[in-house]
Length: 106
Image 1 (cartoon, rainbow, N blue to C red):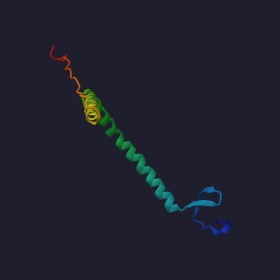
Image 2 (spheres, rainbow, N blue to C red):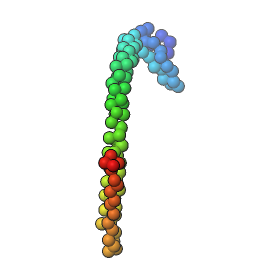
Image 3 (cartoon, rainbow, N blue to C red):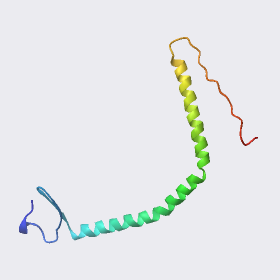
Image 4 (cartoon, helix red, strand yellow):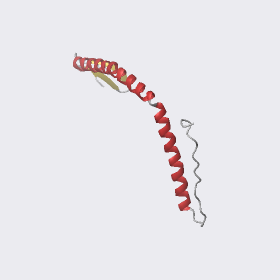
């Protein structure tokens, strides 16, 4: 531990912990301040992009929902097919697929 006059004058104490002291120099303080300032500016510039991104995403929400629905059905059918192939008994499994009428065509 640096105590008393052993510490250089341009070192500024920032925190203490049992057996440890943390120092910053004026240069480090300036660099930390400029980094904080830069991060704040970056956050301010990213926010409009994020807003546009989510707006675009929610514009096509119905397409995403349809895609997820199709993928979940496909996943289910693939799982059933895989299960049928792995069954050790000579049972025959095949899913019955029923097509629902399209509401838009009515």
